[in-house]
Length: 406
Image (cartoon, rainbow, N blue to C red):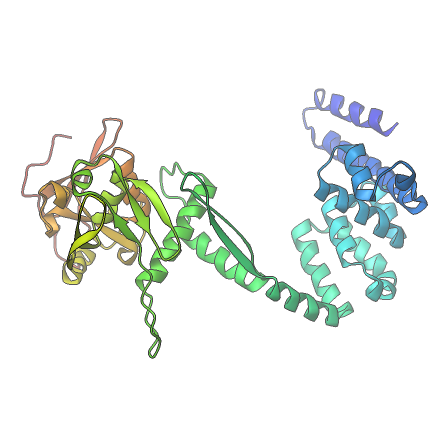
């Protein structure tokens, strides 16, 4: 009967100018059907019928019966058991007035420790669940739960903190997988940092998940750029070391390796050319077997005073529409020093990590025009002029080479 009601509601969508009433009716019918399912599941579990059917657990039986994922089956079993302890809420859910997300939050909140308080306050909790959207409902329910069982909240907070973990693993293709669990305070901090660094710019082409990944990388770059060695601690700053044959580096062909304290990854030569734009360069000479036979001195490609000059001129990433500050940028050689380009301001431009990567490895190019002016060429054949921002009240410098025709 409920299924036919849903079908009638769906058919009604085609005949109405405003489909909202039909969608509302269909939603309530789905909730009513879900309430029936929860009652049936609870009855079967209480009678232990899944044992007689040959299943080791109620979860296995429900998984095989419904085809839903294990996680969804566990949620269904919890709802089926706990909704029996909240009769007013059960009636409202069966009538279609309570969203299932709110019902799940109520099921999480109900425990034997708060059963008496829950029963006392059920009318109020039902009103909240009916009237409030899920985000607001979660807030007031958490407030209620904290007062109803303060010891549980303290235990939960400590358990959440103790369960924090982060896993970073390398995949076979050199990519990496990151997953972890953060306590609420840490989650808020990390989420806010990622949000601040992942805002879309004009003409943004990255997906939201790609922007978040780039923001996490930028957070690491900022942290390492500002990392201090603690006095009294014999700990060196973390390093990423890229090793490549000289001919491959010059030609941009072949590949090299990136080494950290924990891992070694093979990368294309162009990746190392990008890293070499602004880094410490150290020359090694090896024999054909790879044994180091000469160990030269490390030399900074872009000195700190030169970088400060670029900071004053460029302010930050010069890519159109990008607002990443200078402290989070690399100094990019418009003509690479490996190709004979000079390491001086007219051949250098500040780019954030994302746009530096885009330039080197997605077939973009930048040509110096002098005076801090550059031509940005896209792989699609279009070009635009990058003019330096104003410095104080001084007028912008003029290019030493004529600008290309508009």
